[in-house]
Structure formats: C-alpha cells, structure tokens
Image 1 (cartoon, rainbow, N blue to C red):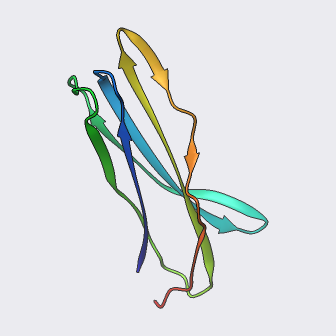
Image 2 (image 1 turned 90 degrees about the horizontal axis):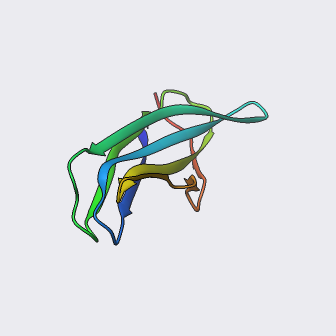
Length: 101
C-alpha cells in the first residue's frame, strides 16, 4: 500500500523552466514530517494554458499503525524573463491509513 499525491500546473502565459514539486507529509508524534518529495520539470518553453502534471510522488506505507498523510504542491517558473514561485498549496483532505505489512 502506498500514499500518492498528484498536482498539476497551468499558466495563461508562455512558461520557461517550470519545476512542479509535490511533497507528502505523515503524522509523526505531535506534528507532521515530510516523507517524500518529487519534482518534475518542463525546462523548455511551454505554450500558454498547457497543463503540466506531477503524478510521481508517493510514499510506501510500511507500518501497521494508523498514519495521517497530506500533500503540498508548489511551482517555480520563468515568465517573460522574471522568476516566479507559487505559494504552497496543501491538499484539501488528510488521509488516514492503517497499512498491512
């Protein structure tokens, strides 16, 4: 069993050097810790309104105790020669899993 989080990015301008990152966080004691991170890139110029996906971020569940997971996604890109970074977007729902090992 694994926990996956997906993200996509779309911009209404031509984008150069797009990096889309997804991070997975898991409950750990009183808080959460990052357990997985993956970045996809589209280094060439993408046309306006092209959707870029990150579907490669996952964490294998290897514990019988119930854990809570959530994801965070953000992007970095260059538009018209200026570098931009989106604020992190957190998944709407936390997911609770009890794995069988």
